[in-house]
Structure formats: structure tokens, C-alpha cells
Image 1: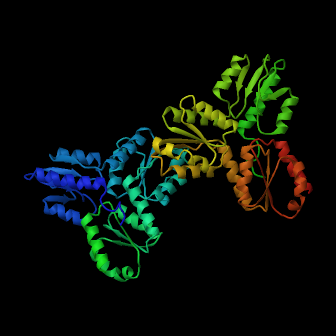
Image 2: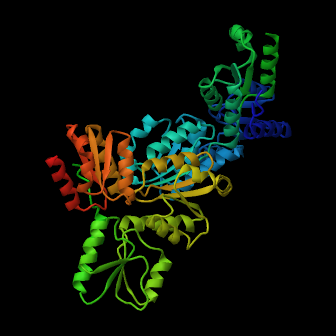
Image 3: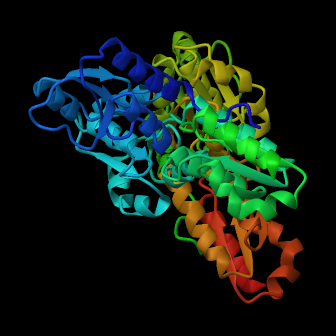
Amino acid sequence: MAQCAGFCYGVKRAVETTKKIKAENPSKKVWILGELIHNSHVIKELENLGIITVDELPENETGICIVRSHGMAPQKIKEISDKGFEVVDLTCLDVKKVQQKAIQLAQEDFLVLILGKPEHPEVVAIKANAELYSNKVYVIPNIETLENFRNEIKSYKRVGVVIQTTQKPELLQSVVNYLLPIASELKVFNTICKSTTMRQQEAKELAKTSDLMIVVGSKQSANTTHLAEILKNITNTIHIETAQDLVQFEDDIKNVSNIGITAGASTPDNIIKEVIEKINKI
Amino acid sequence: MAQCAGFCYGVKRAVETTKKIKAENPSKKVWILGELIHNSHVIKELENLGIITVDELPENETGICIVRSHGMAPQKIKEISDKGFEVVDLTCLDVKKVQQKAIQLAQEDFLVLILGKPEHPEVVAIKANAELYSNKVYVIPNIETLENFRNEIKSYKRVGVVIQTTQKPELLQSVVNYLLPIASELKVFNTICKSTTMRQQEAKELAKTSDLMIVVGSKQSANTTHLAEILKNITNTIHIETAQDLVQFEDDIKNVSNIGITAGASTPDNIIKEVIEKINKI
């Protein structure tokens, strides 16, 4: 099993602090806007503790509202606070740094490119932060999208880049290679977080000596999905959410001698443990 | 023949202004420290006009001293001026811009990487300018050299890059790809000049439809040599200095139907003309 598998420090901090807040404030309602982390088991566990996950805060309610590790648009935080909720900001410190770098680029009059998926909550919040200072902020999920901004980049000349913390380094590399000949000034913050980099590197090494790699974690989780995509290029790879999903892969598991296991940043330890037990049984 | 072949505006300006200065100051001695451009025919032509090319200015002399298009270390310019010479600065405006960007990076506390050959006079002058503001200025001719600074880059984190105006874009690309995973902040000025970029792009297009490419210009000239190196990857390519060099390639010329011609930034028009006439004769 990869040593870097499972919860990163940002996720651990968010989950533990949320539980602690509820424990210390039993009489108050604790709300989370959007899933705290992309894992339905953790969401259910929090629900059992009385911590409520919602898409929109209901009217005529009060209590504590958690800003999850992905961060949140500053306008949204103000709105929640104005409604009378007590805001606790658990934005991952690495994500906070991306927001700050995007703001810096916007303030320094760079055209700001945020590499990542436009719908990812982390990206939405980074964009909202930079847009407080500039209207030249674009989200770039792939090279094809960048093509739409080619002329604008050429005429703007000063181009700044940040990347969502759990993105793949290949995206950063391909975008920078595209920009080099057309941008006369290029400022790049490699904001892929250390946890993601280490997790990917370690998993790649493990994959080289494994007949089969098993990636454990939600299919909604960006970093887990990227992990599976990367490993597929090295060896036979299966992406599962829980031990139960292993049923359909029993033959694959029986037919190999080395199995490597890793898990995304939002996968709890007990789910990884169950997977290992199930594999041993098979 | 490639439209961008031959003198670029910086070289044209340096040669024409030098001649004009001598014409307007017939009684004064006009000196050039180092070859005005890397072409021995032009140097000889200037000599015939009484413009003297030297490696070091002699003692007990006066007159006008030309700073050539490659630029010069500021300390050196001051030294010449202190000796009593009248200094005329003909540094190419594109080269001036690289010097300014390198200074900016040094002032902003970036570790400064200058991509190019350490002995190239343009690189020497860029380095000297940046070193007025920082002692973290390194010249990087290739990826292998960069390896020596790996740990320093990792610990310094903020890395700035400029590139000698006539370098190959491939060098910039490979260095940036090397830096992306290890530098958390990367500021890149793509200072390859427009003239070089256009010349290379046009020559590459021409090479695709040519059985043979002939590159005309001094073997001492960096931009001419790079041009030949790039074209060799596309089609059969010959690098010659003058029409006389064609003698040994008569068979190559007779055996093809399409010949493309280009020339470096320091190759005068009359030398290109002679080459075309000689090819027609063959």
C-alpha cells in the first residue's frame, strides 16, 4: 500500500475541526454548504453527528456555517455572514495560497488563467477571488479551451497561471508549452499541492512493480480520478469506491501476484482497510 | 529565397549608424570593441572606411567608441568613458529589453537564469547588467548545466528566466519543462526576438517544400548556426559562408530540383546575391 494513500492534512483538518465544532456547540446547528469532502461515507458520518450538508442555507435558520476545504467565493461568505450565520473558514491552506496567487496576478495586471475544471468548487472560489481585482480571469480545463483565448493572450502579452491543487502536472506542462511562444511575459505558480504531487509520484513508482493497481475513492473526487488516469498509463488499474465494488473484479485479483493500492485525499482510512481485508479474502 | 533572410533591423541600424558617424566625424578615430556583427566581410568593409575593430582599446588614444548591437557590461562602458572616449551605444533595442528584464528579475529577488552560451557577448552583457542587483545570476546553455543548480532552484523557489535574443525556442521550452515541477514561482520572459522567430518559422516552412536548404552566414554567428541546426531536422541542409563555399556542393545542387535559401541576421545582401547567382550558374 502506498504510504501517501488517503486523507491529506487539509481534509483531515476539515473533518476533525467540523466534528470538534459540533461537539463544542451541541445546542447550535452546524451547516456545511456543499459536501465537506467528496466522499458520501464521510458525509453520512457527519450527518449522524448532526452536521447538516446542504446546497443552499435555508431561510429563517441560524447556527454555524462551515466553509469547506475547497474554499468559497468571498461574496458568498459575506452573504452567509449577513444572514446571521457564524462562519468558520476551513479552506485548505494550500487552496488559500492559490487564491492569494490568483489575486496577486490580477492585481499585477496579468491575464489570469486558472487551470482546472470550471465546475470544481475550488476553481469557482479561486476565480471569484481573482475577479474582485480583474475581469480578465479565465478557467482552462484543457488545451482546446485555451485556443479560444489565443488572440487575447497574444495582444495582452502578460499571462499569469495558477493550477487547481489536485490537478495533473501534465496539464500545467502542456498549457505552459502552448503559452511560451505567444506570451512575452509568463508568470507561473505551480500550485499543485505537495500532497497531490507526492501521492502521484509514489503511486507511479508502485505501479511500475505491480501487476494491478487498485485506486480507492469517490468517482466524484477530482484527485482520485486523476490518480486512476495516471496509473492506467503504467499498469492495469481499477478505480473502486468501496470494498463492495471488488466483487466484479475477483478474477482480475486472483490472476495476479502483485497488487498495489492507493487512495485519494478524500478516502477515509476505514474504507481503505476494508478494501485490503476483502482483497486478502479473495 | 526566404523573405526574412539577411540583416535584421538591429544589425542594419548598427552598421548604418557606424558608417554615418565616421562620415560625419572624418577627423576622429572610430573604434569598435569586438566585431560589430559576426561577419568578416562587413568588418573588412568598415576597416576600409577607417573604422577600427579591436579587442581592447589602446592606451593614449581618443575618439569615438561604438557599443555594438550585442551590448556591453555597464562597468566596461564606464571604463571606456573614463578613459576619455566618446561612447555611442548601438545596443539592439531588443537586446536592451532583455537586459532590462534581467535587471527587473534581479530586483524582484528572483534567481535569474539567462539561457544562452556563456561566452556570447550578448549573454555576457545581460549577465553583467543583472549582477549589478543580484549575485544569483546564472547562464544556462543546456539542460545538463541546469542540473547543477537543481538544489539551489528548489530552495530558492522563485525563478526568473530570460533567453538570448537569437536562441532556439526549444531551449526555452526544455528549460521551462525542467523548472515547472521544482520551482513554485516561475517568471519567464520569452525574449527571443521577433526577427529570429520569423526567420526560423519562415525557413522551416520553406524547408518542408525544398529538396535542399542553403543557409548563408558566418559559422561564428549564433543565429545562423541555430538556423542550420533547425533545418537539418527537416531536410538536407548546407551551411556556407560565401558563394565560394558552393564549389564542394556542386553535385548536391545539380541533383535536386527545389532549393530554399535563407541567411542569418548578420549576412549582408550582396553575399546572398552572389550565392544565388552562383547557384543559377551551377
